[in-house]
Image 1 (spheres, rainbow, N blue to C red):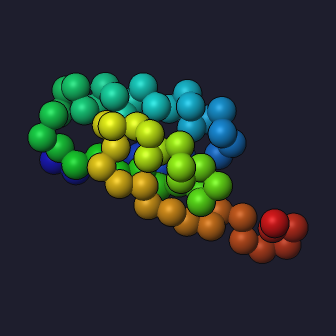
Image 2: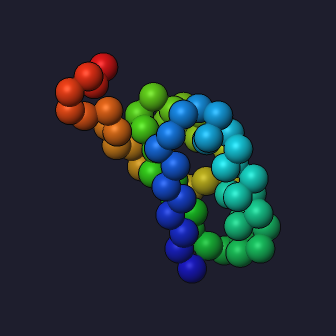
Image 3: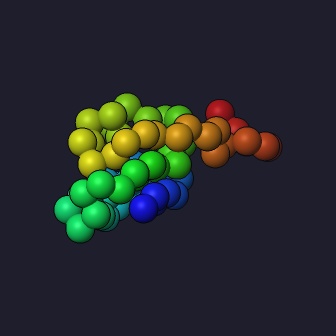
Length: 66
Protein backbone atom coordinates (compact mmCIF):
# COMPACT_ATOMS: atom_id res chain seq x y z
CA UNK A 1 0.00 0.00 0.00
CA UNK A 2 1.22 3.53 -0.73
CA UNK A 3 0.38 6.77 1.06
CA UNK A 4 1.09 10.36 0.14
CA UNK A 5 0.68 12.95 2.86
CA UNK A 6 0.22 16.46 1.48
CA UNK A 7 0.87 19.19 4.01
CA UNK A 8 2.28 22.39 2.54
CA UNK A 9 1.18 24.84 5.23
CA UNK A 10 3.06 26.45 8.05
CA UNK A 11 5.62 24.70 10.24
CA UNK A 12 3.03 24.12 12.98
CA UNK A 13 0.73 22.38 10.51
CA UNK A 14 3.50 19.93 9.69
CA UNK A 15 4.26 19.24 13.33
CA UNK A 16 0.59 18.57 14.07
CA UNK A 17 0.38 16.14 11.14
CA UNK A 18 3.42 14.05 12.15
CA UNK A 19 1.33 11.64 14.28
CA UNK A 20 -0.58 10.70 11.12
CA UNK A 21 2.61 9.32 9.58
CA UNK A 22 3.44 7.42 12.76
CA UNK A 23 -0.07 5.94 12.95
CA UNK A 24 0.04 4.87 9.30
CA UNK A 25 3.41 3.21 9.80
CA UNK A 26 2.16 1.37 12.88
CA UNK A 27 -1.01 0.15 11.14
CA UNK A 28 0.62 -0.59 7.76
CA UNK A 29 4.28 -1.40 8.52
CA UNK A 30 5.11 -2.58 4.98
CA UNK A 31 3.59 0.43 3.23
CA UNK A 32 5.40 3.26 1.50
CA UNK A 33 4.75 6.66 3.06
CA UNK A 34 5.82 9.77 1.17
CA UNK A 35 5.17 13.38 2.17
CA UNK A 36 4.73 16.28 -0.22
CA UNK A 37 6.31 19.26 1.52
CA UNK A 38 7.40 22.83 0.93
CA UNK A 39 11.18 22.94 0.55
CA UNK A 40 11.51 25.11 3.66
CA UNK A 41 10.49 22.14 5.84
CA UNK A 42 12.23 19.25 4.10
CA UNK A 43 14.87 18.89 6.82
CA UNK A 44 12.19 18.27 9.45
CA UNK A 45 10.84 15.26 7.58
CA UNK A 46 14.29 13.69 7.36
CA UNK A 47 14.05 13.33 11.15
CA UNK A 48 10.83 11.30 10.97
CA UNK A 49 11.57 7.56 10.66
CA UNK A 50 8.00 6.76 9.54
CA UNK A 51 8.49 8.72 6.30
CA UNK A 52 10.12 6.99 3.33
CA UNK A 53 10.63 10.12 1.25
CA UNK A 54 10.06 13.86 1.38
CA UNK A 55 8.88 15.10 -2.01
CA UNK A 56 9.77 18.77 -2.26
CA UNK A 57 7.78 21.43 -4.08
CA UNK A 58 8.11 25.18 -4.13
CA UNK A 59 4.74 26.17 -2.70
CA UNK A 60 5.59 29.87 -2.74
CA UNK A 61 5.34 30.61 -6.45
CA UNK A 62 3.84 33.75 -7.90
CA UNK A 63 3.47 37.36 -6.75
CA UNK A 64 4.93 37.92 -3.31
CA UNK A 65 6.89 34.66 -3.28
CA UNK A 66 10.15 34.71 -1.38
